Image (cartoon, rainbow, N blue to C red; front, side, top):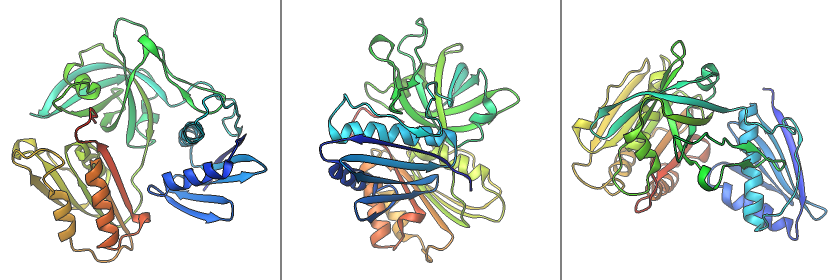
Length: 355
């Protein structure tokens, strides 16, 4: 496999503490190993090293694509600032994409139409100005940029010299939310985004989904996140994970085995399932209980007949604290290693956080 590579270093009062902070923070999401003063990470999209050298924090990363390299560089740059507490740091990247200032994975689009799939799931169809082929082939998830005022010209983000993404501020600031491209039509140049209609205030994603009108402009950054290759898949998630679970099932080839535990409010929230794989789809109904409180996903996964983890990939997407409980349970009780398990906290109960 061919990788794109980049490296940077920055003088810090305690670079060893920054290495430790990276290790602690990201050990929950990827495989990380200590080697003296350095920490190595391995992920399905690449690898890299964080180390302390001569009073400097150093990062070296290798990624499978330009978009992923850009995202990882931005993540590293933002966390260097966060962990050090110093917003004035000035450092540069060497290697692939070092001179990049415009986001190569930024797309603009306009709403074509919107309609309800179920009482609580609304679809927004967006026509992409250009680059629909790249948008539909590089991953499952995108970050949508919701304009504060459709009457104002958008101020799109760009890349700083440190590799961090610079977002518009003040009256031009855009709400940013991660969604799955549920499906797309390359010939028509359109993508479909599905929005769960949450109740509550300050939920720009749900508000956009509910009010999007033909002609509204939206920015899109991505895509990223692909389904790892395996033979046996187990998915579990609530409504927020339903779009990605349905898309992964739809794109899964024949010969694969898939078991899904999908928690929804009631039968009216069911959607049609399409797949060439051997699928066992289980709908779990909360019947009026609040999302994130029913415990149906945990019960179902505890009762699942686990037969080892060779050739297995497990995906869990739900409320953040519930996802953490399930992750611990699957590790402690089912003995599943991190390498075959991906959990995502798509929302936080009690917070103004939508998906």
